[in-house]
Image (cartoon, rainbow, N blue to C red):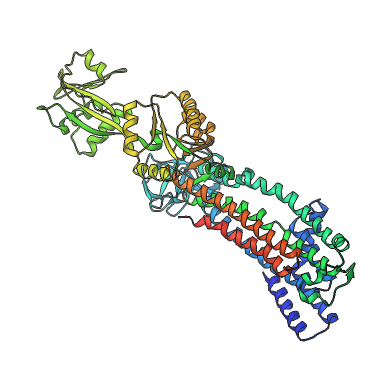
Length: 631
């Protein structure tokens, strides 16, 4: 910035002296000093690139155009072009740096050291040296350095750096914690579950750092376009400067099309101004710089990745963002994606005229007290939450594939499926089947006393997320291995358009193909190991951050907060990113073409050319970083 200010001051002094009538011999050294200060870096870069065979870049074009301006004694324009090019370059760097810093603040959370607990002592070691099973101390205010399990203490954990969720969550002994999150209150001891290379922060950082390697098609197009476009303009400029004056008819007075400042300094060649044609050619060179295209399009995708990371959405490169814009159907797994993946008691339905719902739940919890099955655990949890007295049975027998038989003070309790009831000759005439969920039938002393309905819980944001996706004009489809009635109930509660239930893992991929044939490009959202093949086979695969590692690795997008609302947010960011990329391309090319035509007929001088190059670049870059502020 200092060199820009110094060069600008000398340039202004030179302009004032020129208007005061100071001679060219005095002005030349002054403008030359300003030119070297402002353009020295550009000239050196151009020379280095030419030595590597990279001739037709913006540094070469700026160097040739400004040196040419000096040769035709247009000193102020040569320095002015370089000055405004450097100013534009400065704003470009600032815009890019803002984008990078916002992204890295969100994802560069990798620790350098950790506090290793050894007996009663705490040793500071490099994070890379920590192994699975090591015990680490995490003090209040510290980041959790590695993925682990809390073995001592409790605290509120700020998960926003990883998931984007602003509300801290309570974590206690037995809870898993992800690296990158912040311990806000109590002191914790965690047992390392994953080493640094496999921890959450490393996966996030690697994905962002490698994002540039997977260039979207529009980025590849711009790169190929610039390789053809820039040499073409250079050779056309040579044609204008060296050939056009000789082939235009003598009656065509070229200098009338040029800025009046040059009318008195022209050299006639076949009735045409040689200086004017050279000046026009130099203007072409400045205009032709493809900076706006080459810089703004990658920045738009980089900003899209940044906008996603701020919301807990990890795009694995620009290709994923570009593919999302073509999605016509969002296909989702049910358990762990639309639902929370936890079994919760929905109803306790006692037989009419018998015990009440609390009594039914209490004897069922007593029967299931020793069970390790998720369904049994959910019944015990519901009873505990209701504050019911749970009796430890004197005898328990688990019948494989049927249920549990337990003896309590009230008698013999049977909890299980219909097979268990039939095997014990229980009369089920009072039983009325529910239309969804898993049911546990309960009998006491040989008499059916009721049933308990258990089902997965729909995520609170699922209905609003599905509605937001549908407002984008995208179909919603659910693929699940669950029973048809349960799947249809979830679809009805959330507003999903299509349901395909009772699918084996291998069936999901074929169903995905059918959905693609019906609607077009598909995005699949899942979380389980069994979803990995479907995630890889979809046009865009998205995994919930709470899901299996295999699913996260196979996905193109990861929703770190595991919320459904991340789906429409990702689609909106992708659409905005792609729209802004094409806005930049169309705007930059349109301005350049217009100014080139103006320059050909002498209505655009180098100041206008600077706007067509640097000015347009700055506008496109500012347009790109709008994505970072998407709501």
